[in-house]
Structures are given as C-alpha cells and as structure tokens.
Amino acid sequence: MFKFSHSNPDFYIQIKGENSGKPLKSKIPNSVGVVVDRDKLVPDYLFYIVQHLFLTEEFRPHITGSAVPFITLPKIKQTILNFLINNNPNLFQMKKIQLPQSLIEETISNASDEVTAFINLYRIAVPDFDKVKSINGFPKVSTKTAVYLIDKLSEKSEKPVDMGLLWMNQGFSADDKTPHWTIDVSNVQLSY
Image (cartoon, rainbow, N blue to C red):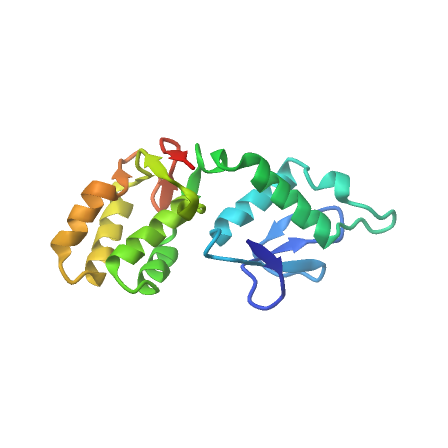
C-alpha cells in the first residue's frame, strides 16, 4: 500500500518533535517520505488518513523519548494499517475524496483506452475496487466535474457516443451540492 522512502515521495510524516506523526506536504529535516502504491490507494487519500490519525492523537501512545520525542517507522506503519484494516470496507462509505484536475488528467492519459480510464477513475473513488463484487449507487461529483470528466474521457474515445452510454449505465451521478473536484461516495454501498 505504501512504503517509506525519500525517493519521489507523495508526502512526508514528521518523526521527531512534539508533532511526531504529522503529515506534511513539504520535507523538513525530521521527516520521512511516504510513497503510495497508486494501484491500491490515492496518495491524497492516505495523506488525509494520516492527518486524521495525527489530529485524533492515534500516534501519541507510540511517541517515546524524554529529551526529543520521536516515533518509529514500524509504529507509524502499524497505526495506519490498523486504521485501514479496522475501517475496511466501510472506510470508503460516507467519504468525500479529492479528485483534482491533475489527477483526472494523469489517470486518463495513463490509460490505454477510455474504458480503462473510466474504470481507473472508479478505482480512485473505491480504492479496493478489484475486490468489490457489486456497487449499489453511484459516486457523486459536481456538474462542473462531470462535464470535465466527460470531455476528457471523450477525447480518449474513438466513438464519443460509446462514452456517453458507458457514463449513463455505469458512471458517476452529478449534482451541485458536491464540491468541485471531489467524489462523494456516501451513497455508495459495496458488496465484497
């Protein structure tokens, strides 16, 4: 799912000081890089899980050291994995997942065709998509995001009509209550 590395990390986690366990967008001297396996998780999604764990003080019992507080990498990993295991599969229900334009463009451009791109967008909404037997309901996006998705997917399609049919039968629902560049999966029920 993820590993610790300073080679092209998706984000960082502070490992020393009073804020041990805090996720960071930029490197600081007492931090470790986190590289996320994008086939399993969306990097921003894991970042927000770590932020949740930090804000709810889930790392606090694992911080040691009298002069300089610190947390070990195995304890960070254990805390994150325990959270994921204890909250899966319902972890993906009642959530809003960030879907920035850059992620949409990257997902679509890396796919071999529009159907693969579409399925990979679903994998963002449901990170354990390949284990799901059925999905009841549709992930929601804003109308602006939906139009952008359709336009980008249509650029990849040889027959734009096919993309519209795929969207209508399997796609995302759109409403103006969902924030732009967000996928709302609160109305989606998964069967494994």
